[in-house]
Image (tube, rainbow, N blue to C red):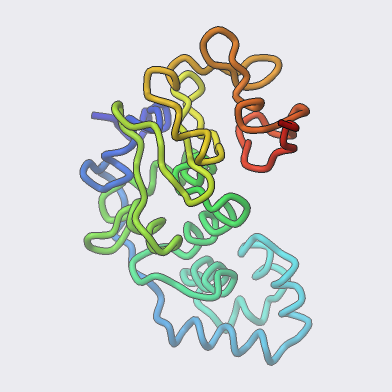
Length: 238
């Protein structure tokens, strides 16, 4: 079993039971959500003070906002500042879930809408906290949070399944890199687990056994901008 010091060293597959909430780490203070009424009061104040609202829209840090908008720092308890700021940024809140985490996941999902990949964007401290007892409300896990955000369940990778279909593209776990590639579903369907295990990141991008270039299989005529995001492609003329 991992500890708070070693959890960030685990691969995405090894993290699966923690993501699901089947395994937890000790140590977190039990989280208590702010009330919707408190959030509404904060949002109303932003509407009343356009300058503060403009500052809010420009900033990504709750600490910076309350340092600049000192009246807001007085009107609202310091212990609620972080939750109020990020819940307002999200435009909604989940009971039992810290709004800052929701906001971070929202940003990660914005460009890709890829749930397994989103987890890779969480920093070490955030990830560790997510897996600690008391980090969320009862029966809430990182998996259920992400599933609620994308509006559906999804496949967590394990030793026997490295693929999560997402409509016209599929998340494919690349074990040699402990990273998630995004491939057209029509291409990913042809990859079995044994072939995926052969994929390596090279100077020219992801390559499978015998030097098969994954980008070309995905339909790229030229080198893609990303080695791992191969959803958008310049099709090779047939």
